[in-house]
Image (cartoon, rainbow, N blue to C red; front, top):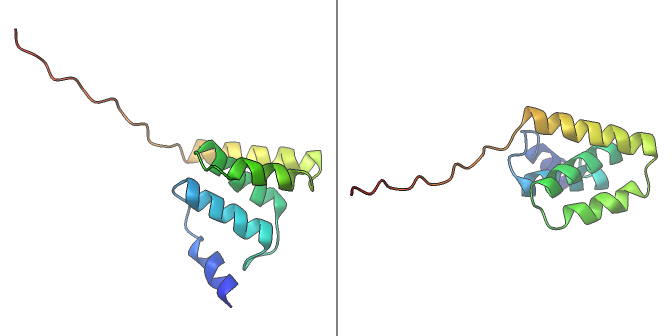
Length: 100
């Protein structure tokens, strides 16, 4: 029953690297959802790109269990998701104008 609650907690779009990593864990372990290595790879890939320190390692581990076609599908899905959900860029602080 707790697994369903965990999966339900991530029905909203993940907003940061930790949330993306959690989605990868849910899909790779089948916590409240069917195990889906393509989705897990996608979320670990996104989490790694957004700076999660363990995501790249787990992405590599599950990739060993996937076909090249599945990996390609996961990579396309990650690329599509990233295009649809760009990270807001942080503008550099503006320097104060100094009157001479």
